[in-house]
Amino acid sequence: MGNALDVSPTEHPATPRWQFPLLRLRVWFAELVRPSELQVNLIWAGLIGFFGALASVWFRNLTADVQLWLMHQPGGLGLVESFAHLPWWQRLLVPMLGGALAGLVLLFGSRIKPGKSSTDYMEAIVLGDGVISSRLSLVKCTSALFSIASGASIGREGPLVQLSSMIASLLGRMRKMPTVRLRLLVACGAAAGIASAYNAPIGGALFVSEIILRSLAMESFGPLVFSSVIATLTVRQLLGASPLYEIAIPAVRLNSNWEIVLYLLLGALAGYQLADRMRNAGLDVRGLCGPGQKEPAARALGPESAVVECASVGEWTAELSRLSALVTVNTGPMHVAAALGVPLVALEGSSALPLWAPPGARSFVVHHQDQLGCAPCHQTDRPLPCGCKCMALISADEVWDAVQGLITGAAGT
Image 1: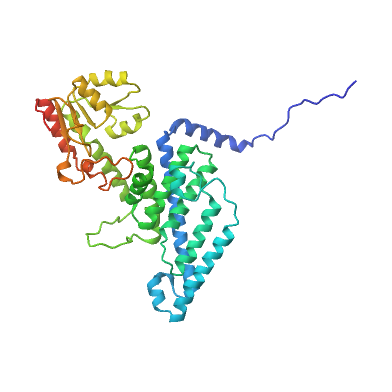
Image 2 (image 1 turned 30 degrees about the horizontal axis):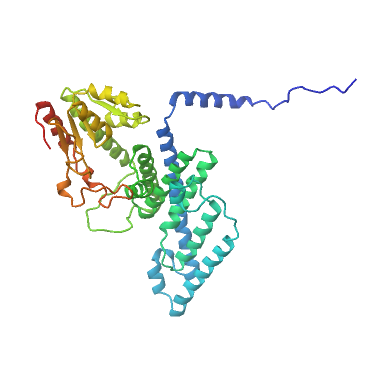
């Protein structure tokens, strides 16, 4: 007889009893909350903004310590004041010593075999998969640290953005996030780094969205702004709220970090303004959007407005035919509505008028091209130099007046 084969199941250690309540609480919370994809991205954007701000503060303090070690002058004096207190021979020696240390760091760092990942955060966002090499990034930031502390003519903004983007990429890889979300997290890290470097949250978000992502879609711009604001609030809490460059305008400061809640409420109320005025006039406001855009459209219009997602030309045609009037920008559905004879208000930015204006006597075109010397323009392959002012100049009152003109039967441009 052959040897018997033991096929008894492998025994695993039992789960401790004290973990069962925690597991039940976790399952209950996940079933209760069920966060959307945008909400998850906002949570991660806030974490990245916080850790990016901590990296910014750490790098600044470390730069001051190295400066104190090289010059025996307090880092709080600044480079110009510190060099002013040094004798002539030390003014020559300190940059030479800092350059030698920076070169040695790069020399030893060159022995690290470069992998498939890049250290350029722009390349990782636009062309890559969101993966940034942590070791090579630390080498570059360490070399920049010695250069900055010894008076080299480079700024600290680059290392701050690099560290924040590296942290974002590292967190995303640890959670094994998909490439699309990883790219967005790295973009949030870059925005947080710029915001913490210049103490400018809106500037950080706009730079990444316009220069790198080249998109102002709510799905990406919302997390960018949230990450930048969290980073700025953290840096201001730790280092103070003084701006990087003082300008002669009345100061606007937060007396408390809780004031940001009031500003958020103000933005939400402003978003409901136009839809509320239409509802108060007895109009039924309905939002039409493409696939995957229903949640941001519902947030923009408010809970009282219905949002319909159209996935085909037939669905767009059917929904547009039911409307009494349409408010839209220059899009494909605008021309479909004009062909169907639907009264519409077209918000035109930089497109050539009247070439792309909707035809028909029941169409309003709202624009401000007469106030700008750069319109019309078609710079779709690079950022607009004017910052899209042609769209920013259009107000809710103008749109409401145009809608009333459609209701009363007056049409024009």
